[in-house]
Image 1 (spheres, rainbow, N blue to C red):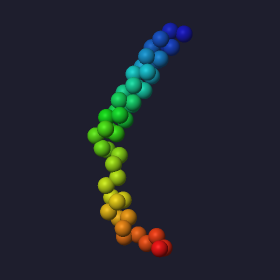
Image 2 (image 1 turned 120 degrees about the vertical axis):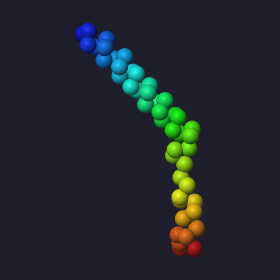
Image 3 (image 1 turned 90 degrees about the horizontal axis):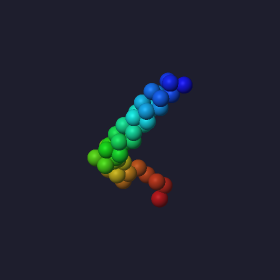
Image 4 (image 1 turned 120 degrees about the horizontal axis):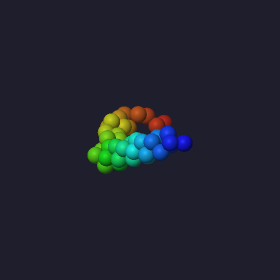
Amino acid sequence: MSVVYLVLPLALLVVGAAVVAFVWSAKSGQYDDLETPAVRMLKDEGR
């Protein structure tokens, strides 16, 4: 049972770090799609 007292805070710390990393990367534009808008006009959509 004493292992839970060690593992639970470590797991929460890792999850918190992952959430902070995701929020930071999303705000800094890491997931912005810069290629698709330029290529979209080249694709024929059957019109």
